[in-house]
Length: 437
Image 1 (cartoon, rainbow, N blue to C red):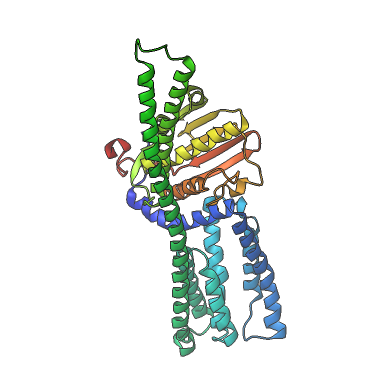
Image 2: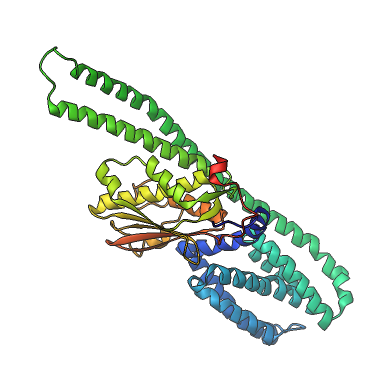
């Protein structure tokens, strides 16, 4: 049997790696963020040699280093192709790059120039830029880079200067600036969460309001069916009327199931997403197929499950159902729009990285649209939903240190690949789904 690593180890590694994974996924799936990173890389790669010339020849400073600026310029270049990095290599590159480029380089130059006014301002600007990244990444880079710069200066310069008035008086200014930036970023995050919570609450309210008329319709249909089935009172009911009532009853039940799905997705927006149990993938897929409101037996028959090897992963069973329900709903809508296709779900725990493949051969996704599908509030076509489904799926997967990506071809297929952390030894694991239930 496959197991997952200890909760303490998972949580510690998760807190450390999660901001890097979030940033990498945002670059992968958000063209605007990718363009911003590339623009910063160009500015940094060109700015380093430019300012070396500026501070050496036009406005000479006490200290300059062609070597440090060359290394810094070269470190900017890989950011021009962020999509070529795996999660692991990108996390390493981002940490080393940010640490060297901003806190280390600017603190070291500030100290070597004995806290000159120009380098005082430059260091403050560098820290402001740094804390526009995720606060956890920025704080880790700030502490590491500043400490290394002080150690390097202590070796190459005058260690006593580190405790001088010129240096120490900058610390309150820097810390106040970083505190204000952090508060502003938290405010933006809270605003985004409030918008999502409001959308979820509205969706939940609408779903609940739909219950009453649906119950009324269903009751009236049952009454009409009983009236048609009375023996010896009037002519026998025609087949068309019986079929119409049965269809109405089926549609009402379908709507009840869809409301359950919407409420489940809405509640997921406001709940804690971190893993707290061991989830078996095959059980989750089976639960989704039982719960999904298929419109007919024919629609159910186009969905096939291929179990190459089952696997377990740290997550939440209900949230896993939310992810799979969203993917299944999107796949069936794609097939409906295309007027053809099938859905294949492959559980591949034997792969080096345990994964689930969700494949549909419906209308596919255009290459120009593919980078946008995980953006929050983006939907295509424009009237095709609220745009929170896939964004929520990615958010949940990131909370589990897992990954979701899509490979697609317009008019042919869409393949969603869900990759999960490697299972770890038995004696440390979350409660299983069975025990949780």
